[in-house]
Amino acid sequence: MKDKIAAIKKTWQIIRTMPKVDINLHLEKCENNHPFFKRITQEFYQEATRRHRKLPLIRQMEYGVALFLLDNNPETHLKAIESSARRNFKKALRNGYYFKKINFNDYLDDIWDIRRSTKVRQGEMPEDFIKNKPSPRTDPESLTNSHDYAYFGVFNKEDKLVAYSGCFIAGELCMIEHIYGHSDYQRDGVVPMLIISTAQHVVEHYPLVKVYSYGTFLGANPSMQRFKKKFRLLPHKVKWHLSA
Image (tube, rainbow, N blue to C red; front, side, top):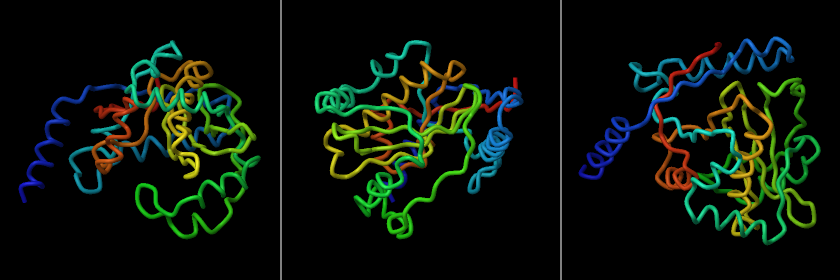
């Protein structure tokens, strides 16, 4: 009972002190893009602003969104993160790993290998996620730099994909929606390289983005909260805007 009370007090303290931020998804800039991007932007906004399942007085993604505020300097995020994350990033560089934006369908075998490399991540993985080879994506390529659904990867010296992520990009937001690293290469810092390099890439190629996010902070377990804190993805109160 004492632990539960302490956890509630800690959560309340976080809520009281979290910074506020406005995020504009700039739906109006989808007009010159494939209709797919208008649709997924509207779906994200509807999900983010609908009533919370357990706390109907607030919105689903209103309190505790884990994010870092970017500027036009690609090094800002790298300089802000904890020193242990920077050391892991430099370790990956020393060991010859490299980062690039990828086409998901070009690396289906490597992606499947990453998924099968461990049955437990932040909890046990679904059996079909591990046993079934991923299907090719049919999403269209974005025609603009204001909206995208982008995949990024980290490769070893043998050009094998060892970590990958999928990111939803809409106006001012870049949100990591999923991220996976091969368990055999985790100690080499491949996931930190992926997170840090993605932030750098976004600043350089998506000029509207000012918010780098990875889901929510308050709903995460303690180990995931510690992981997000390491990369300065900290809880904020968000007011979402669909258009300018």
